[in-house]
Image (cartoon, rainbow over all chains, first blue to last red; front, side, top):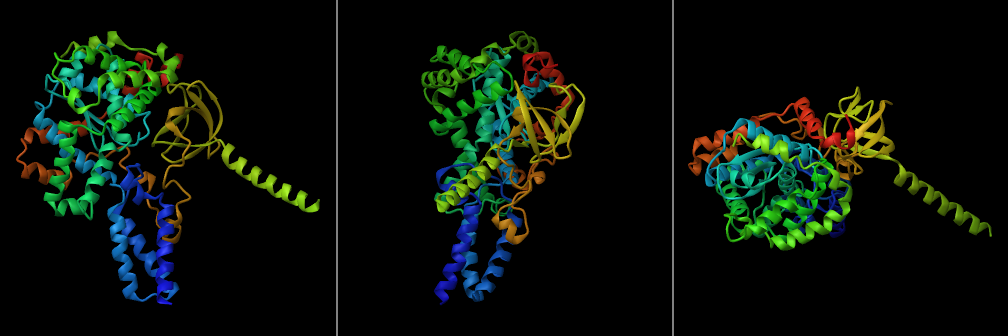
Length: 311
Length: 171
């Protein structure tokens, strides 16, 4: 009888998690999901367990057993927005630390933010606050930290020819954030490392764990690069966002063509942290077939040159 | 024969119900402060403002804009990329868990939309100290967060470049 009661409670819990969109499977297979609010979630589970447990006549011991089980499932929950921002801030610190610091030119920084926000505003996570900064490095690079902290180097800016190219590069980075590529990578790493919680309170209490997370992120972002399929996905979504924003959607591809011509000459980690540029160009060409009317959209070369004169 | 008619009626009812759900031209605002304007331009009169997760009834589409009716009955135009076909989580209805516990798993309006500026989180502040990161870089992160672009400035920028909502002549 007790087994039946216990099975009943387990079935209800599983059904509840089905209602949450199989988030625990998403953790393993990398599908992005919504945000968590840890305290509310915990309180909710408590009420549910005790309420249903008493209906089934379960003993306190059984309820405790399932509470432990629920803790494991909660550890697999998607990383919440506050946690994402904390990670993003620490990665941003490292970005400034490793890439020459902040390039402080108010008008150029504002320009990059205007273009970036135009793109982010039509993305699939427009509610997030995106922040765009320029790194004082001659190397060509751009990357996105979780939480919407996006960076572009001065070297890359100096290589671009127009605003549509800038929009294309920023849209690719925004797509990494909207698709939660880095967050999902962190979650998978946390599961494999038996990290039981990735909440703000856990991060505050365990600086070593937090530091390990940041090491993993910076290693991927700055040195090894993300999985190549995630880069291709960011290209596809980036083209869509640039198109929605009204820029000629071939901006990213045009920049990649410039970059491929510089291979062997230019200093850029794109060659080592991103998949083959020729494959990316070819995939961009395929995707651009969907946006033929976008050919008429502006590239804004004159405005770009004018705004970049301050560099 | 009577049984066949009964079955056909039942199937018809199911199809009608599912069609009602599928074709219900309801879309949801992706973020707070999405404006519903009198014309297909963000510079025209604002008829209503909808917030993240708010449902609107889509009456038609023209180019990159959708004509919508808000819950309060106001009719106007919205830049269609600011709407989602998918219901925004926490914007009503709730899920099975919240139905049982009486708590919403995610409150759409609790997100960092509109974003208060609050400086480094405790964990990232501690990280900065432990790693002995130059305080200048901490200030750089804070400057990033403090840079706010007012809506009017963004619209003017987009209007001059004929991008965003101004593609195709929207004024």
